[in-house]
Image (cartoon, rainbow, N blue to C red; front, side, top):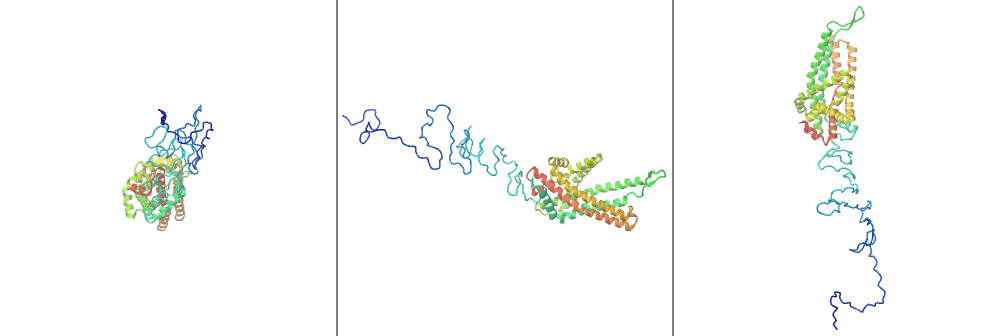
Length: 422
């Protein structure tokens, strides 16, 4: 008889003694111990179906594989892939490419990333950045919280005032001569012309009790207002030189660029004619508003207060642009301009007080005598000098207010504004 196995058998011959058919079967092998660090139960053998023979829907069993410290231990929802676990290759429906935030995937919130459900910013576009040390929520990229001229968005009135004061401290040596030559000197000349051409004589009373105007009153009145109007037009051009030169000094000093009186006046002369023309138009609009009622004229003065900086920096539609700036951020611009107007109003009140004292001391016709004429002219000069700080505050306050409004619209700094002046 042959020792080979029967034909067709592929199992090797067993070595050792033959098995006892009456012996009990060996016990089943227990489950393999779970690897260290896992929290689940036994893992079925490879290729075995754990739901074999089960009828009905198969439940979804979450997997808990090494959760991040401090993060909730949640299973990945069906059809989604956690960041970093996406397979390589082109994207397909049901999973996301690496680096792409999947829809519905929250994950831990990291600084600099939007909240779940928020719109992701477009690359290269200006969008508000998260608040950080020394920053405010809603700033645009490129906004420097330490910029000496531009008050950042949502910084408030305190930093605005601090930048105005810093601009005065930096530039008073150049700004004061500009203000004296282009604002105070015209004020003195107009004050003296007012003393010289004021209508003379007092109202008389007719026998029937009606007031009688002095002889030549209307001729003197027309001459008086004609002289003042002509002086205002001529000196308005000189004042435009001063506003342009002062804006140039404030902006360039904030940008750290060299400034000088000669260069400032050359820039002012180059831009004065256009600024003077827009000043005449704005003055006409304010006057027309005041003719209907005081409130419309005052409203027009506030709404168009930024036309000068708009013209000097942007060189386009200063009236419409200033109007839109005022109404797009009504409370902010109104508050800043109101502070500037309050300083001008205080200067006007002081000048009126000085004029009242001069009239009480030297009379209503001081130019008839040399002594009273000298005293009245001295009071006129003193009143104009009192207005110099108000002119300085107006110059600086409007430039800083304009720079703040530009920062509300997008990233800007002192260097960019200085370059825009040309």
